[in-house]
Length: 203
Length: 203
DNA sequence: ACTGAATATGAATTCATATTCATATGAATC
DNA sequence: GATTCATATGAATATGAATTCATATTCAGT
Image (tube, rainbow over all chains, first blue to last red; front, side, top):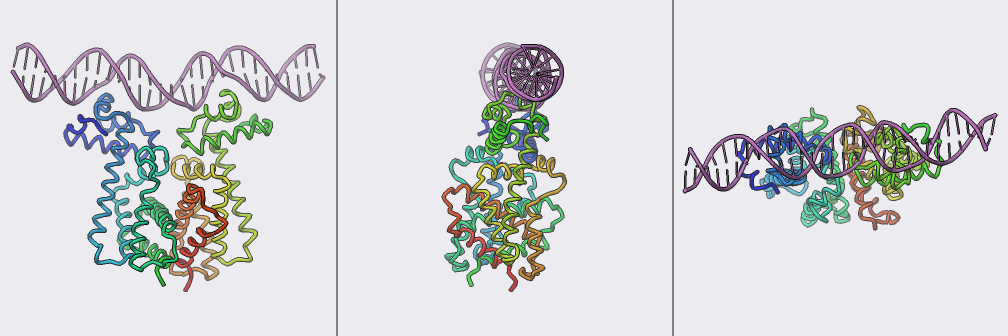
C-alpha cells in the first residue's frame, strides 16, 4: 500500500502519478514497466516516487486495486439496475455489454488486466491461491440461471463458466482492437448472445 | 535464426539446450527468462550460448518456430485422417480434441504460446502485421462449415471465430491446470460441443 | 604428432534500471 | 526569526542481467 505521504498529496499531483502509472503499465508488462518513465511523465523526481510507494510492486498492486474496484462497481451498477426486469439471458447480455462498454471507455485498463492474468506469479502474489475470479463470477450467474430453470440442466456449469470467460476476453480484445466497432448497433452483442443462448437454453 | 554452430552440435547437446529453453520460457515471460538459467540447466557456458545464437530473442524465435510446427503437424494429422468421414461439428470436435491432447502431452508448450499471444510487441515481431492466426484457422473451418450448410447463415463467422479461439484457450488452460481431467471420458469435450453445436447449427 | 580452424569457456564489461541517501525546501509552530 | 517537521530532489549506488572477449580446448585433415 502507498505510504501516508501519497495520500497527503494534492489531488492533482496524485492523479498525475496514477495516470502516468496507468499509461506505463498499459503498454508494458510489470517487469518492463519503468519507474523512471512514470516519474518522468508525472513530473516528479525519482526520489519522490519512493516517498510515496515502497517500490514498483507497491504502486502496481495499488493500481490493480483501483482498477478492479472501478470495473466491479461499473458492472454491478448495470446489474443492479436491471436485476428484476430481465431474465437470465438478458442479464448475461447486460454483463457482457457493460464489460465491453467498460473496456471501450477505459481502453488503457484492459491490457493491464490481461497482462496480470498472464503472469501467474504476479497474480498469485495479489490474489493468493484464488485462481480465476472472472470465471467465478460467471459461475455464480449460471447457477442463478439454472435455479431459475433458464439453463439446460445437462450442462456442466464450471466448464461453461470457463468458456464464457474466455469468450469475454477474446471478444473484448476484438472490439478494442477493431476500434471501429460501434457497440450501439449491437450487432456483435446480438451475434454473441444468439450463439450463447442457443448453446445454453433449456429446451 | 541460430548460427551454423548450433546445427553442428551433437544432437544430445542441442536437445539439452532446447529442453532447458523450453523450461525457462514456460515458466517466465520473454523478458524475465534468463539466458543464464538456460545455459546453466543445459550445462553449457554462457559464452557458448552466444556461439549458437545471436541473442536471447534469436533463441526464442527459433523455439516458437519449433513449437508451431509441432502443433500444426499434430492437429493436421488428425484433420487429414478424418476429413472425409466427419461432418463439420465432428471435425470441430477433432480439432478441439487434438488441441487438448497436444496441450496435455506437451504441457510446457502451452504457457509459452499463451505468453506470446499476450505480448503484442513480441507477437508482431514474429508474425508481422498478422493479428491472430488461431482465429484465422477457425474462420476457415467455419466458412467450410457454412458452405456445407451446417452452420446457421445468420451468424457472423468472424465473431464466432474469435469466440471459438477464446474458448479453446480458456478450456485448454482449465484442462491443464486441473491436472486430473481425463480426456478419455470425453465429458468435457461433449459438454463443450453440445454448447457450441446448439449455438451454431442450422435449424 | 602437427596445425589451423572451429568451438568452448567464464570472467570482465556494459547496460538499464531500481533504490537509497544526503541535502534542500518550505510551510507551520513557537 | 528561529525551530521543527514533512516533503522534494536528483546524484550516487546497488542490482541483475545480457553480452563480449581474450584465452583455452577440441578436432579434422595431413
